[in-house]
Length: 129
Image (cartoon, rainbow, N blue to C red):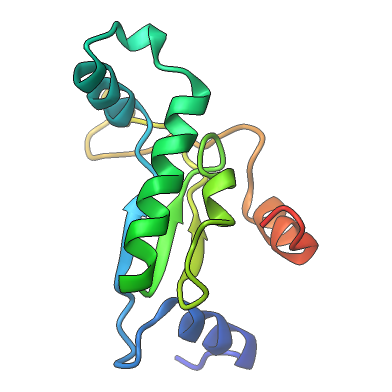
C-alpha cells in the first residue's frame, strides 16, 4: 500500500521520532462527566459544559508535552485544542459518547453535526484551532 505525500505528512504530525503514534486520549464525555460529579460530590446533571472543557484544557496542557498527539471531542474539547503543546498533533473524534449495545460489538453512533469533511474544513480554517 502506498501513501500520498499528504497522508505521510499528517501521519508524521501525529507520530513521535520513532514513528509511533503515542497519543493521549481525552475524548471521554459520559464517563468523564460521572467522574467529575463524583469528585465534586454533585449530581451528574450539575456538571456544566464549562467544567468539562476546563478539565480537558488542563489535561491537554499537562499531557501534550509528553505525547505525540491528543485525541479530543468536538463537543467539549475544542477550547483544549489551543492549549496543546506545539509538538502534539491533533485528532478529533466524531462519534457520540458511548456505544450502541443493541448490536454485537462496540459500534459507535456518529455525531450528526460532525464529519470528516467538516473536521478537515475546521483544520483549514485554523482559527478554530
